[in-house]
Amino acid sequence: NLGVMNKNRCQAKEKWNGIFCTGFDYGLVVFESLDIDNFKRILTPIELSCAAVGFTNKINTFMDHLWNGFYTSFTRLSRFPSLVPLNQTIVISWTGTIPVKTQYNLQGATNRDWVILRQRYARPESIQVTVNGAIIKPVKLVQGQEHDLTKDGPKCGANKFFFQEQTIEFVVTSDPNCIVRLEQVNSVQVSLRMDTTVEQFFEKKGDVEFIDKITAVLGVPADRVRIVSIRKGSVIVDFVIDAAKNENPNITTTEVKTALKTQVDNLIKTVENGTLSFTAPVLSLTYQLVVAPQPKNTTEETKTNETKVQEEEKVEAPVEVKVVPRQPVTTNTGTTTDSSTTKTPTTTQDTSTTKTTTETKTDKTPTTDPTTTTKPPVTDTTTTKTNENESSNTNTSPTTPPPATPPPKNPSPVSTQSPTNKPIMLEGVSWLMIAIVVVVSIVVLGLIVLLISYIMAGASKSNKEAAAIRSDLDDRYNSSHSRIAIELK
Image 1 (tube, rainbow, N blue to C red):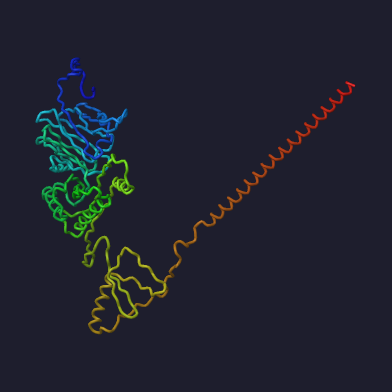
Image 2 (image 1 turned 45 degrees about the vertical axis):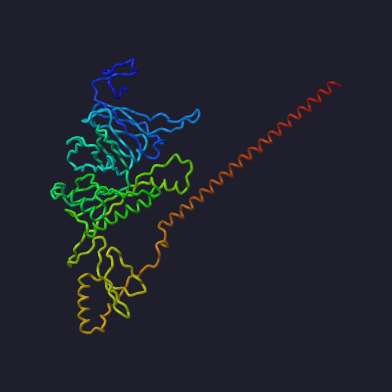
């Protein structure tokens, strides 16, 4: 394979029926799918490449394991061994969709050797890395800082997850016990933006406090919360909240999303009401529900319609919603209100009793009823004074109602016509267009009639000419016949 080995350093060994190469530091990476369809689904060709040393290798799947008479069974194990340069970053490019569960290990190398494997997922996913059952959390990516996975020595399973690029890098060492597993899990991907700088965030140990507060408020174990990256603008913390393990194989996508949405709602509620506070105020919160695809058991030949519907639902695109927490706003009178729905007091007068309504959203325009008395708008200051006068009047004469406000002299008429019954603009133009269409239709129809008449007249003339020619031929025939008869006599 010229993409793997340089032929100038290799020589053929006829007795081996092979090639012997020197001066290369290569190992064998073996990776495979652990999904239920790992004997049926085709994922190849798969390309492994390393730009640093000019390495590239395309591999295919194994041959069939069984035969059905004279035909292959199309049963192939999705396991892929490949030579790779050691102590390098290898990019794995899958042709098919990456399986939900995959496993990787490195063979044929010394204990000091390692490789970093990098692969990109086609859709937003939350990837959980485990080594011998232990969850390995990703390195926190801080914008503007270098993050070398092997700087302090290669550690099996050390990984970086690039939140925005849907790409993961992870370390596989030559230790026989280093078997790295990647699994796509149900989770909520959250980006929380706070009003501070990256430097101030770390000075106050914001990354440590962040995990502690999230787990305490939501009541989830710490291994289900993972900080993926910390970015500028002001400070954006990208983190993942994994869903609880569910062993029920028949759980639907709707049920998974409902459980994840409940966690998100609790998180948003605690941020809005101040129960969850960090080293800096929260400016905004963006989240995305991510449901891992469920591989189908392709060995089953028959499925019910209900099962098919469930499988189709599980591959739906994730939902993205941006949530901006409500911030307290202080009015001129010193009253603290909600920025999303500001409420102001409004007084209404009844004929029998006096009632005060104090909850009306200012973002709605009041409608006027033509059958009732219209009152002028009342400002906050006027309302406050009116309330004070009412309280003083109540103390002196509780049975005396406040004076009614006289109606305006010339109330503006209110149109009762619904928007659907309004006259249509440019109605004259519409009628003009209709008239033009009718005239054009009549002209076209007349032309068609003239054309048909012309064709019929031509046909009639042709018939007459044909009859005349036929008559002339008959006369000539009869004349010739008579002449011949006379001559014969």
